[in-house]
Image 1: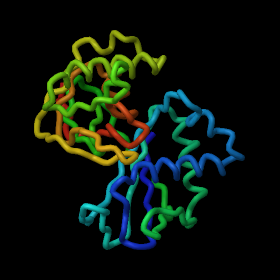
Image 2: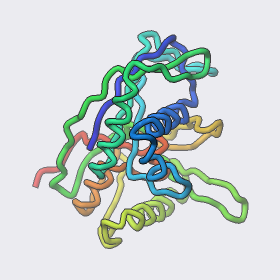
Image 3: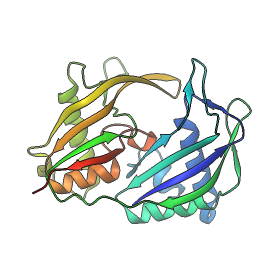
Amino acid sequence: MRFKIELELKNEHFPLDYRPAVISLFKHSLTVYENGKHFSTYYEIGKQKPFTFAVNIPNSKFTKKMILVPNRKIYITFSTNDVATGIVFFNALLMQNNIYYPLAYENAMSIKNVLIEKETAITTNTIDIVFKSPLCIREHSKERNKDIYFSYERKGFNETLDKVLKSQVTKTNNLPISVLEGFSMEPIRCKKTVVRHHSQFVEATIGMFRLTGNIALLNYLYACGVGSRKSSGFGLIEIIRKETL
């Protein structure tokens, strides 16, 4: 299930580190919806979250301190492979229509519409995709108690990607680990980027890739995202070409 959330800002100043604000909006919406009975399902510590999202800020200008959004419009794409999750978030966010939620810089955002989007059915084992939110590949170093992030050009990217995908598939409980056999992710046109997240600088990747693999795996990655920190606004993909049979 995939849907788009249309939001309006009170002024044109939007924080560079905006993903925590979106997560906070999600949490608040779940707290209010049906007396908060769904909150712990998704935001209890250690819970696997079966969704991803991307934020689109059209006609914007990035400065060192903030993002300037002259038309005061932003859009969030939410995607999940679990219909029940999609319905809960859709309804919870729809209840927040026209209610302003506070942001930095004396700003606030208000949901104006929530629209279901048509999903693309994947029926071939090769697709070309573009990342709508950056690809985040993370490895935690126990010795240093530190997270290490890999863009596609950094040594160890492919090995770490394999580990992350194995963990992802294992935690779904719906797919056998064998679906990863033969999977590959070939760069087409992409580049390293550095983004702010919870006041940290995260090395990530944006651009186009060719994904080849098991059709069930490709459909899962399309619905739930690729890589680490998916539920924090990373790894959402859009299909730009399917290889015909």
